[in-house]
Length: 198
Image (cartoon, rainbow, N blue to C red; front, side, top):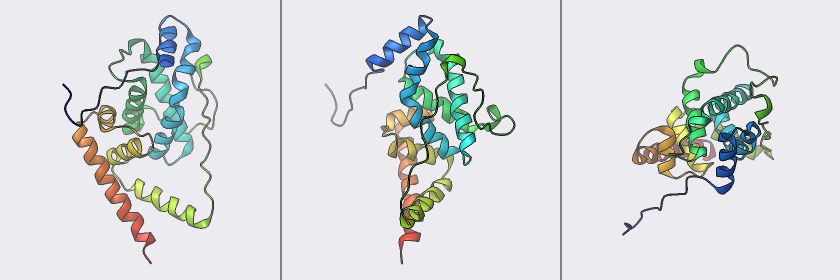
């Protein structure tokens, strides 16, 4: 019998994800792109939260994909592929020395060869001086958060992840994940309110 408030466990993978994963494990190198492509916008958005320079953000996503490419054969499916990819990105973001080499690349070779997944995400359009000002204040407030708070809030507000999934990405308990989100929201709202008050 389920407890009140208990969420049923989400299926580990969609049918499409299982299809492409099986093809990849069967030796189809072309299966990597359609397997990870649905997760690119979310990975790129989170990378941009961690890196001020868009080129570094692209490098962080590319290095995440390289690590995923190398480790996919051993992926057991204990979590969803999406959670696994976000976990790789968060770990790399915490240790820039593991992936930053020299100047940011403005494109060029990614090391993925035929499995390269392009970044289709462009800058978000912002209209009007007030909207730009508010966006600047939000970005500034996000920058002042700790890395874990910033990541937790982004995963909750932008990616729509539940606390159990956020906890898997951050390697903490769901209660800790919820506290990171709540504290981040409190700090962001307080910071933005300073600029909204007359």
